[in-house]
Length: 143
Image: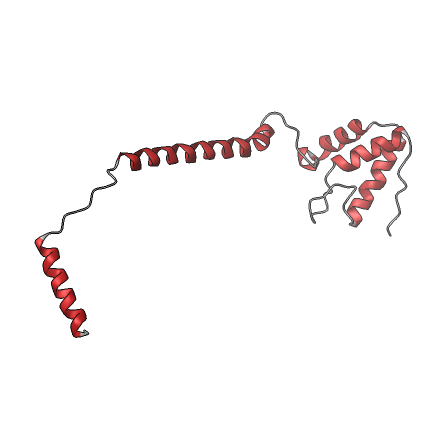
């Protein structure tokens, strides 16, 4: 039986909205906030959040209680501190490092190609002349 949650108003409504947007629904379907998920478990969590907000708890207190009970995995986005900071900064550092590596490689290749003589044409050898004569003969004969 699904009960429609009536969000509290005023300060309690703000606390409810904050907590519902900050917490991840632990139902196992798509990772969504409690506010956005449409499953029955999310409805249960919304009712509990509305009760906590109606009891006078702030949004931070509600979220802290859920984090204490379930750990940081219940948060929609982990805090940017400690080891979690690597999750926030790691991709950007990787992209910057890859860009620098590619720029250095292109610079090195450009220098190497500029150092090569550009107008050197190999002189024909006696073997080339014999090969070309045989090739002309074969083309003329239609082989």
